[in-house]
Length: 57
Image (tube, rainbow, N blue to C red; front, side, top):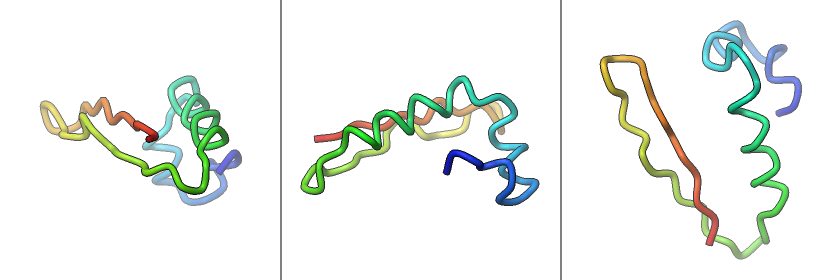
C-alpha cells in the first residue's frame, strides 16, 4: 500500500499527492485486530470531490 503508484495508473489518478493518503496508513497501523472499521463521509460531491474518512472502534 505504500507503493500505490505501482499498482495501476488509476491509483495514481485517485491519489495524485500522498499528503492525504499517508495518514490512512498510520491509522491502519494503529488498528487492533478486533477494531471495527467504519468508512463515513464517502459520497462524491460535484461528481468527483470526496472526503472519505475512516473511524476505528
